[in-house]
Length: 373
Image (cartoon, rainbow, N blue to C red; front, side, top):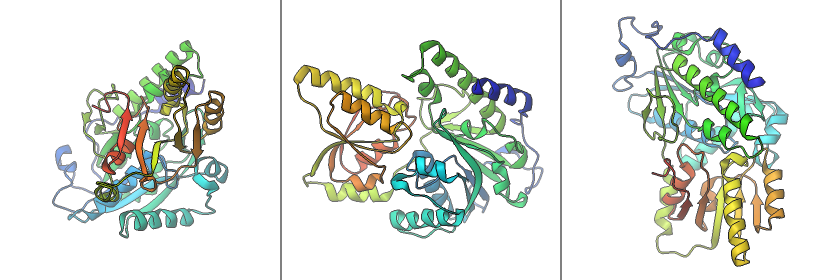
């Protein structure tokens, strides 16, 4: 019902702004192609995302790395990273180790400290917060205020929307293409795959939910972005989008890989990912329970991750006697002693954790998907 109401809301309120938007801070005669060119001159670039550290998820880590990278370019772009601020009860649910923040300044200080420790540099990017709330039915943070308000009008030049579908499902503020000179969306998540494979929803409801989400995503991405980038062909919608993996891995992972050459790993296999059924836990349980029935042996696996489905996943693994050991979410770079990483996800758009594992010199075991190809 909530999905249907959201669809009706968007259909009544959406403002199609895919045509060339009016120019704000730039000369009105600049073409869309000129406004998309980030080379050769300093620009105001605002990166909007739907998660924030210390939630160790791709939509918090990769946008932060992108913002820091853009700041370091020779053009000396002025960067704002816009992230959600959520209530303490949601922080307790999502952040590892029962970590919470009493104010935005404390969370911002944590983010900057993480950059210093993990990237070996300080950052001067501006970090701004918009209000958000965790929605368990979507396993996502949804904005409850207008994210465009994070950026002063005189700085609204280029906007990078990380997860342009998700951030716009309930968008009630200024249309992005009216607020900014150029808007590019980076598609992180395969929502169709999440909806169609949810093991806890009957088949008819899965089909209807998947179709509604597919339609919503088409509407909002078409309406609110000048250009859309899909990280891989795993996302089958958004026909006008370009496919390009604009993610990467930190130098720290490559450094670990160089040091790992020729040495023995101390630990066996592990899986790292959000504790959501859609991340492949069902498929992995099916495979390893079949192996256990066939051989009488369980494959020991250490599982790192936090999320709302963690208790149910741990309970099911214990029931199947799989021999899994569960740990809170951690930085992937802390797991350098393991030899084998298992990634059973069929929903990943791009396997960032797999790329990190390979960079560290590990063996990665995956399903064959478009993402892997």
